[in-house]
Amino acid sequence: MTDLQRSESGLVLPRYGRENAEIDPPLDFAGYRSTALRHPKNPLVMLPQMLTEVTAPVLGESRLGPLDHDLTRQHEEEPIGQRIQVTGRVLDSDGRPVPNTLVEVWQANACGRYRHAVDDWPAPLDPNFTGVGRCFTDSEGRYRFVTIRPGAYPWKNHHNAWRPAHIHFSLFGRAFTQRLVTQMYFPDDPLFSEDPIFNSVPDPQVRERMVSHFDWDTTEDHWQLGYTWDIVLRGPEATVFEEPHA
Amino acid sequence: MSAAGSDGGGAGGTAGITPSQTVGPYFAIGLTWEDGAEVVPEGSEGAFWIRGRVFDGNGDPIPDAVIETWQADPDGRFDHPDDPRGAVDWGSFRGLGRSGTDDEGRYAIYTVKPGPLPAPDGATEAPHIDVSVMCRGLLARLPTRIYFPEEEAANASDPVLSSLPASADASTLMAVEDGEGGYRFDIRLQGEGETVFFSV
Image 1 (tube, rainbow over the protein chains, first blue to last red):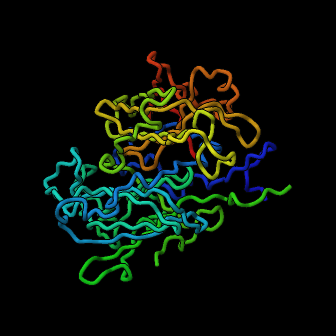
Image 2 (tube, chains in turn red, green):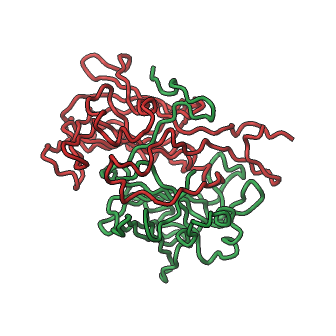
């Protein structure tokens, strides 16, 4: 085996899959105008994966309030909107669950408006909706949020530009190399075809990995619709449990 | 059943990997924490501020960026299962810092200096902090590193600094002492003085 980085001093580190232009969007993407002045012109420098890159914060559950996973119960009343439950697993690319990792989400309300000073388009705010959630994955890598389905919203990228409905997700994984911020979309959104952010991912099959699935199993009678979405982080190319050969 | 992981990928371990998307303009409602800047609790021994500004290709400050830092403790250790050297002595050390930028593009992180780190090939990494820059207009986070100017000998033998390509300006990775016990580290996403960014 040559997959492990090792040294005579006995330091053995996992090695993770590297950034891959076939998966992630390019930093310079003309269709998304804000990239023009915000992408580096110089090529990225390959950083070897050493201790800082194969570790990540181990955050405690003390970061969570009891209702942080339920965006419909953070105020006196329930928010307006279609109640949904979003569940899934955080895995690595070898299919192994990523347990006990912080998952953070934020989203617009049912009308497509964010509770943020910069968002001032003429759609109402909902006094009963903040749009922020957090949870930790369990020992099997599972996460669960209860929320309302966010609305689509206009933005200024081009004439009549509308973002498809989405929920922002942020994950640490177990290594700096696995850090991921992405967006979860809803199936069959007619706005996909004109959205440069969704389409910045070059491969249409890879794009589909950002789209959740409607799920009868987690849909509850007279209560909520269920969506599932698995998130796959770059995996170690070898596990840390393998013994180095003599 | 979800379809993630079922659409191929194959060799190279890329099966089903979820692609990155921009953090967008509204991350502040979700990603900013009250104690985000505090890598260590207020009043920790040896703690200081790293402050800086984030600029775009026109030299204008970026008011909607989020900076995350990740680092070893002062002993050069990580409280993490993949740091094989065992327990750490810095119980209140979080290692993670997170700061949104303000209207002037300013961020601030309250931390302690990390120790040097062993590398698998027997080399020693100079004290450094890994940084992720995220903002509207960045479709994936941009990693960079902060090094410390007073660590001249360690920096000279650091395996990352000493193997930068000739086109990369190492001075953009060097914090500047601010005369108040802390450091300044500005980040330029594009153009003159462009920060060296990494692929990990």
